[in-house]
Length: 80
Image (cartoon, rainbow, N blue to C red; front, side, top):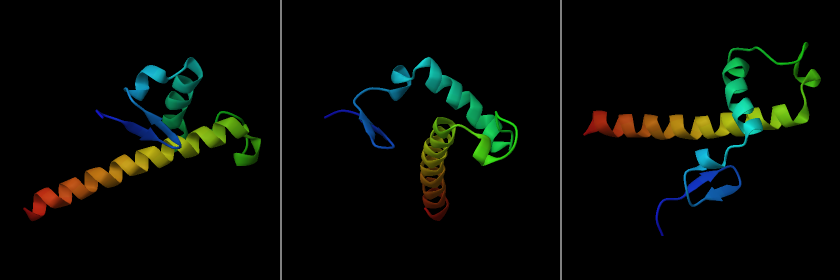
């Protein structure tokens, strides 16, 4: 049935990049700052908006899946 992408609870029949809204793009850009410990609102997690916390959790989960798959593939290449 062709390529499919699964991101969180969503399944896409085409590249999900084409589905990213302007707000989604802002979250993807904010992810780099989040990973560096820089939050958009002063203070800690309790000062962040719910949508920001949810977006960072989703993005971080997907990044972890990709990194895990890359590590498995690298291990297979070393063993072979």
